[in-house]
Image 1 (cartoon, rainbow, N blue to C red):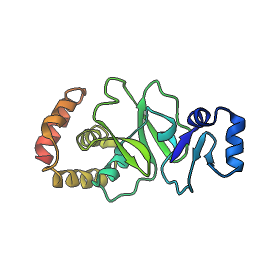
Image 2: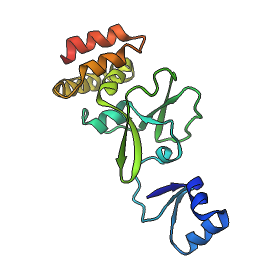
Image 3: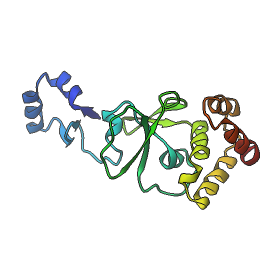
Length: 180
């Protein structure tokens, strides 16, 4: 399991005791501020352990939900506008208004790490909202995959989410014409 520095301080009471536990090999240091009590084969960005405001979005969420075959070049995360920037070359951070940053967020656990990701309905909204940021081919490929999943998409939830966005009419039109 993974632990932040704060969690290690609670467990061992001091930095000195953490260093002693590292020498006894009770825990391992993955990166500064990130520890584990087992061998680490860690492919997931540590931001989900260190930050509560990150949500997997766009291509990363599409891959998570199985609506794309493309492997994203970056890990795409959404954060509130007031969040600190994530300084990592592997991460693309999208700053969102606090009004809709947490709409449609669901928690999943992967390898004992809690990940926040937009659900299938919110991911479809993100696809429509960020159409111009994707290539034409990729956009239509993902839209087709969403159409294949139309039996499991909750359209009431989808339209409930969509009402919170300025682009509501565009979202409704694309869902009506391309998904249903």
